[in-house]
Image 1 (tube, helix red, strand yellow):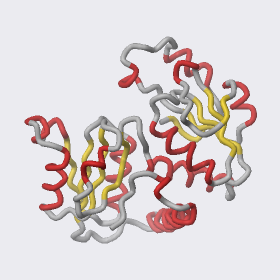
Image 2: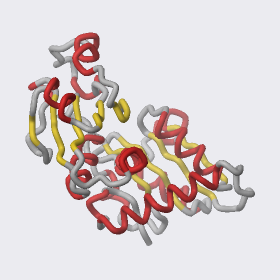
Image 3: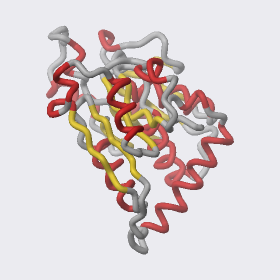
Image 4: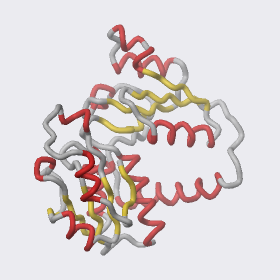
Amino acid sequence: MAHLLRLNDLSVEEIHSLLDRAEQINAMSDEGWLEPNHTLVANLFYEPSTRTRFSFETAERRLGFQVLNFSSKTSSAQKGESLYDTVRTMESLGAKAVVIRHQQEAYYEQLKTINIPILNAGDGTGNHPTQALLDLLTLREAFTHLKGRTVAIIGDLRYSRVANADAEVLQRFGCRVLLSGPEEWSNSALPGTYVTVDQAVEEADAVIMLRIQHERHQHTMKMSKEQYHARTDSRKTVHYE
């Protein structure tokens, strides 16, 4: 059984295979949605999400899956039900896979006895493998080959799970990774080279902009949203996340 928890659990060849399959499905989706089938998939989002949640749901429905959308605010999680018990319930209802966004880093460690695939849609400040796959696909469509390209990751590096996922996998694909942002948002654990914002934008073939993680800063921010966006505007942007 295969989970998708972190991209560093996969080889470069396995990631290429996923990207190849994504391109095939993307081309196929232009011809219409697949016929509905009886495959049941559960989406469990414990944090607010727009792009990730609805991207998953749209993809699932295009593939003909039946979708269970879970909301922590209207479920037994409000009465103390654990993540494990919720996932076990989805499994008992016949879900063949579960997509989880959770505020706890490495939440999946408590789900080792679950018998259906888990797709990590973001775990706290830990990782976001599906966003990293999308970023890789976007870059590959733009440049065909990633080896030797320079990609800048700019913004809230301290709390971004996207930065964690992207920086690691981009280096494995042979990219030069530049990191930049306010000093208070730096993250020494990220692989890459720290440069100024101006240098990052000037030298990069593509720029990945990170949103400010307001919900994790706990009122410690020194830079306003307006100052941040004024410094980081660029035509090379892959996405804001």
